[in-house]
Length: 67
Image 1: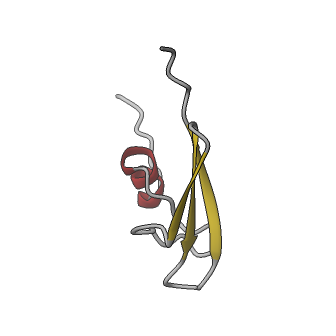
Image 2: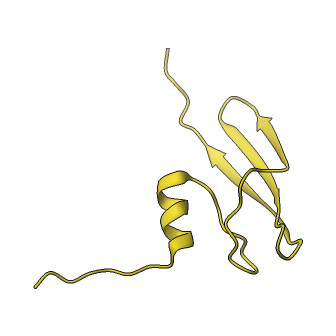
């Protein structure tokens, strides 16, 4: 028998679609309110939850490409 791992649907979306869930209520976010490019290797997304009006941000960091 193979063990099965269960996780809430919101975590599956985060892993595969890159969309975060609200840290307060768990609602899946659709799109950031604002995105900010910071240098050549960072993008910060600002989110506001439609369910509970919680505001938070996420940061994506890229590895610089060697020329």
